[in-house]
Amino acid sequence: MIEKTFQYESYIVLLGRNSYDLSMEKFDLLERYFGHKTFRPLQEEVIDTILLSRDVLMILPTGGGKSLCYQLPSLMMEGVTVVVSPLLALMYDQVAALRANDITAAMLSSMQDLEESAEIERQLQRAEIKLLYVAPERLTNPWFLQLLHRLKINFFVIDEAHCVSEWGHEFRESYRQLSLLKEQFPTIPVAAFTATATTAVEKDIAEQLRLQDPLRVRGSIFRSNLTIRAEHRIKDGRAQLLEFLKTEKGNAGIIYTLSRKSTESIAYFLQGKGINAAPYHAGMPTEEKNRIYGDFVADRIQIVVATIAFGMGIDKSNIRFVVHMTLPKTVENFYQEIGRSGRDGLAAETLLLFSAQDVVQQKMFIDDLPETPYKAHAYRKLESMVRFAQGENCRHQSIANYFDDRIDVCEEKCDNCLQPEVKRIDITTASRKLLSAIYRTRQNFGLHYVIDVLRGSKEKRILDNGHDTLSVYNIGEEYSKAQWLTIADRLLELGAVEIGEFKVYHLTDFGAEVIRGEQTIELREDRLKVKKSVSKQQSSYTGDYDAALFERFRDLRREIAQDNNIPPYIVFSDKTLKDLSIKLPASREEMLEVHGIGEVKYERYGEEFLELIQELV
Ligand code: ADP
Image (tube, rainbow, N blue to C red):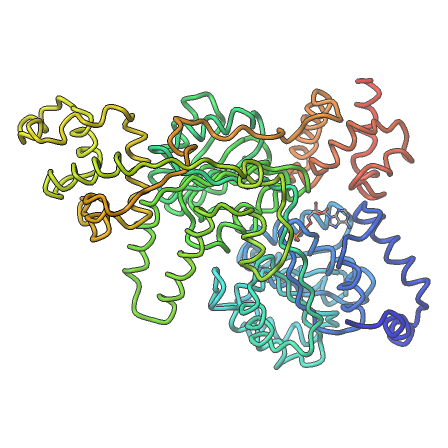
């Protein structure tokens, strides 16, 4: 860490300003352009280090406030800051947000035509652009490098820096080339930012980017506004999903599922229930995808049901929930996906539905990979994810441990902390019945069939096969089909059965021991309850403000956004609207006290909101 005195003296030398002025300037910019009154932990340290021209590697969870760390110092410097970002949508949103705050920003990507690019180039040469966003591919373009050499560059920013590392979860080949920045521009500092990196990935990022003695800043991984729940999926999980959505009326959310087909079937299922949902997957026409993305960001679609193709880099701050219908591949994926909710710092809910069958399926995907060291790595990552899902310790703490961060248990922000005392019941007898039924039907049938035999179904196929004469026929009425599926899932989890080709269940040696009565099997009692999703402690918006006013503000925000052709959250965040409905400002001065409203935002939208407040109260 750098000593503060050293920092301030260096400022004087570097920038010809004294420490008092600098501090004032930082706070002034913070308030004027970003509408915030104080820095969050770590932000100031990173800003100071950037101003000192030292490399930085910052790991801070999504929503932690990384962008400010490079945007604010850029305003204090003369030149242009070049930001490398992996996704067009992300760049687009950042540029729109900066422009809404009167900061000159531009992006160079495949989205611009030649004429537009040429105009941006001219503006760059006239030093009219403070922040330039570019895709990593640009940096290998000789023409572009030549242009950069002619400019006064403040520093380079590498956003989503984990994409540099093969050990991360979103490795991008084009990020590898970023090492050329230090080769071509050895004196220009590089600041790298990511939300997710284990210590191994962190080390790799520093090496790959050739950072020189970077200030390493690691914020707590703990997202205290997210509630994390994980439940065994019952059947297809739709009943659990509907139960969950009951308390999310009108709130924006993402539902992740594994296959393209299921994005569609779940979205149509929700539509049938009167819920404003749409599917999104990589196989859809680009136009359709853009439309859905745009409608979601503009609050015209409430829920997007998507494969993981959706959401990376999405900068919509008011996503109130994320549901996973199946188990993600890695804890990194999971954390990043749930991290898309609650970026505005308000409460958000997350629900993971999983089953032992998901694990089998994910393993099959990995089995098909070529034999490289990555394969073993992928199995290990999956195992960690499974341990997390099945785990009974604090969820936040488990995630923090995974990322080598240490935190106390959350106490009230995850299902395990909210219901620490779970009773276990002995299901050995039921397990023996199910395993015997699998065995008696010659390990030749799918699970549903076997359960139907156990429950005495008169289905033609069962009668034709003569399975109504088996000793296991009709001995399983004490449980519903859903409960038997849960018992089977437990047996799969414990390795008493395996799934073979055509989804046929086989006994393992351990399964045979269970049948012989040599093993006991236990299950958390709550898993057998024909249960609804654990009731939520609090809905996202409760208590201290008027929800009806919030709705009116939301409507006005949507109108302004539509008129200006920008996403609503760029006008004001949910947090700002909430604060508005608590403070109900009656003047410009009072308005400037509201979270997220600085002078620039006030000048643009303040009056309209003041008028609405006068009308309403
Ligand atoms: P990240 O890039 O780390 O995911 P962002 O930079 O998008 O996070 O910031 C997330 C949210 O936090 C934004 O709504 C932003 O306005 C808010 N924020 C950032 N810095 C501050 C601050 N110092 N005070 C209050 N809110 C802040």
